[in-house]
Image (cartoon, rainbow, N blue to C red; front, side, top):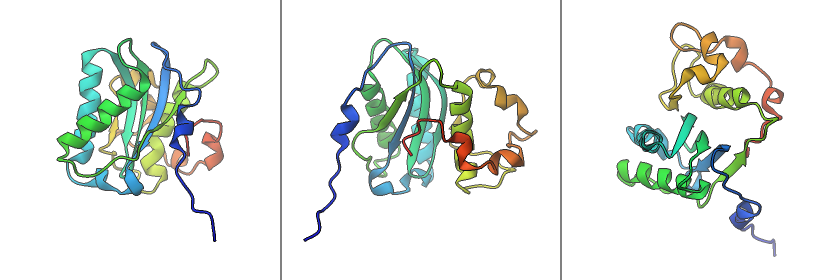
Length: 184
């Protein structure tokens, strides 16, 4: 009888440290990878939850991308909440505002950026995610992308007049981002 696979999300908690002032890259996923975030209004609801948290000043969103079945957030952790509580809040507020459109996978993936990690590369990875996934043409802007302070990222100044990426960025081989801890 073949062994059944079982989720081992408890391993995600091993070594998890919430360090106020540190930059984190988190990814949280819809249950069973259902694409309910692509439904009308769900993306806006999730971004509204992130904007609300950001506006309160207990942390800073650097960049976020809401994809059909997952969300990436690059942020500076504030003093009040740990990383898990931030993600839990975003999931709860986004889902409620969307009218309980769908469920979230339990837990999330996170990486605390180290001094040698490139904030620029992580921001670029988030920005290019929907383009490289083939979800829209290069000449359009992804509605699930949000960067509160575009000057934080040099690549933003290199975008086209409509905010579109240069063609060669989309065609970069996967190895361009292989050094990033993305949870993929």
